[in-house]
Each structure stands twice: as structure tokens, then as C-alpha cells.
Length: 124
Length: 124
Length: 124
Length: 124
Image (tube, rainbow over all chains, first blue to last red; front, side):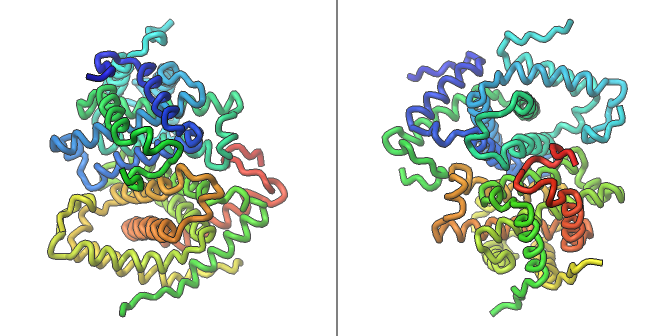
């Protein structure tokens, strides 16, 4: 029996557990925002590596084993994301909502529908 | 006035909004897991870019402007992380809790305290 | 005995010019291997960004403008690669030839033909 | 007129060997520029991973074993860089010299000496 609560969708609970994890191991000394950004991108690359030789279609249809591996890569990314936010005193969800609103006004439906480009290529 | 609720810490609400955002723009066709992993790592790299010439100490002490920019980079990463999870039907928070437990048993306090290595270098 | 040619005159000239560039600007202080690895991956991500919403087929058929942008992204990656090698006193071309030979023995034609997986998935 | 030497004989030899390697294994079908950009960034991340918990100073002073591992990571990056250039018919060294000249005019010594920022932060 553990004290995890997988029903609770709180990023905050995860943050507390991760902070405790780092403190208990005396790892906070390594967890500068600079270092965490490196750890985060290394995990993002492990995700990329799963997909690099797959077609887009294949990337939807993973074997059960691959699906579980990919789930844990996503978890690793989230973990380092939460750690980085914690070290910089950033409210991750608030920032995400702020960014959603920016995106919604930056990419109006009628201007961008069905066309994916890099942001700077849209002439809005 | 918007319908955002920044008090609510639900990843699920964010997921719904982001899915709607993609659908409204007919962008789901581009959002294969493969492509999203690329977008995710590109955002992770923008985070890295903020820190690449800073010392670890400087990376804690960002100007207000930099802090806001970094907040929005973290937001971008979270957004693509949620999108990837959605496309693969992965419960991101459940996966994170599962990974936390794996890490806690993989790195026992008494074995790893104060020493940061790559996982494979620990002789546990 | 192999037919490798580690006579790296042109990489070497580039290396000298880049070292001079950094010294002239008093930038060597920022060019630790750690920092350069961050700069390198940030450039690699700019390459990825060009391709993230393209199909594989589209990624072969770039407009002239895109082709030039991608050329300069590749150049940026090579530049930071050479800088990193210089800081660590690594002979980049010798290392590459060494790695080619490792790959050739790790992936025998008759075992891997037509099947791309992550290295650890091959049961060789 | 510059003193550049775009005579890229040694990169060219490597390119030929790598192209043959891919053809012999029927792997060219997987080597779209899109896929290669993913493989390249995954290798760049393995480099980053070596340095993520090291101080900048430690990143200069690697053990012999680490130094060899890092050499092979640099090799992997160069290999995918050459492959990507080959697929897009880009002359890597010519592009690098072109970029060096751009950088030299973009960052004049007297304006940027001793100060490392992201390019867009320089008010030149």
C-alpha cells in the first residue's frame, strides 16, 4: 500500500512528492533550472527516439509494450517540467492557460484553418 | 471575459480546451504522435536556449521579463505533452505517479544521496 | 586496415576560424562543453522545427528559401559540433570513422536489412 | 574574397561510406530529412545527458571512459548531419563557411565582446 493518489489530478501533489524526493536524496543541489532544462530535453529526445523511424500512422498504433514505454517517457518529461517550474516559482497551469489564450488570439480559426506552418510564417 | 478557470488545476480541462483548439483549426491531421514529439522537443529547446549561456546560479535569478518568457516556454511544453498523451490515450498523471514509484524504488535514499549520475551508472 | 581518410584539413580550417571567432569576442569563457552541448541541441531543434508539420515526402521537397534556411541550420549544428570537439580535444573525423566501423559490425547487412528499429531492439 | 577552403574531401569520403551503409541495409527508405532530423536531435540529447549534472568545469575534465563515450556521441551527431545534408543535396562545409561569414558580420567584436546573449537580444 502506498500513499499515492492516482485519482487526484493535482499537479501540486506531484510537485510536493517530487520536491521531497529530491530533498531526501540531497539532489536539490543539482536541480538548477539550467540543469533541469537539460534533463528535460534529454527525456523529450527519448520520446522522439521512439518515433523516429515510424511513419506518422505507425506512431498512433503502438504495441502494448511500446505504449507503456512511451507513457513513462511522457511521465519523465512531466516530472522535469514540474521540477523546473518549482525551482523558478512558476505556476505551470496558470502559465498554460495564459498561453492557450495567446494562441487562440494568435491563430484565429478563419485565418489558419487546415494549414500548419511555423508561427513566424503566418502573415496575420 | 473568458471561460478559463485558472483556479482549477485540472489537466483534463486543459486537455479539452486544447483538443477543441486543434479541431476548430483542422489541425488534428498534423498532430500525429510523431509530429507532436517533434514540436515538443522544439519547445524544450527554446527553454534550453534561455539557459545555455547562463551559469547555474544565474539560471535561478531571471529578470522579470525572462521569467515570463520561461513561464511561457514551460507552458508550451506542457501543451504538447498533453496533446501527445491525448493522441495516444495516455493518462499523463497516472503515468507520472507510476514513474515516481519506479524512481523511488530505483534510487533508494541511502544508495544515491548527494550523488547525481546517469541512471545506468548507479550500481544498485 | 580500412580505407578511412582522417586527414581533416577542411574541418580543421573551420575549427581554426571558429576558435579565433570565439577568442576575438572573449566568448571562450561561455564555451564550456556543457554550454556548447546546449547550444548544439538548440540548433538541432531548429532543424526539427522546419520538418515537424511536414510529411516525410514534403521534407525532401523544400522550397528554395526553406532549403537555404535548412542549410544554415545544418551549418549551425556543425559549428557547435566542431566547437565542442575543440574544447574537449576530440578529433571529430577520427571519432566518426571509429563509429562507422562500430556500426558496420553492430548492424550486419543480413540481419537488419530493411528493418529500422532502435539499436537496443535488435537481437543480434 | 575569403580564405575559406570548401574542398571537403574527408567529409565527402565519410558521406560516401555512410550512403553505402544505408543502401546496403535498405535503410534509405527510413532516411527522410524529417526522420534524420529526429535521429540527429536524439543523438544531440545523448551528448547533453552526459553533461546535465556536471558543473561547467567538470564538463572539461572527463574521465578517459567518459571522454571516449562523448567522442562517439559527437560522431553520431556528425553522421546524421552528413546524412541529412546528403538527402537534401546540401554542401555542409560550404554552408558552414557561409554561416561563419554571417556570424562575423552579425556579431562585430567591438559590440559583443565578453557578453553572451541570444542573438535576438543584441541591439546591433
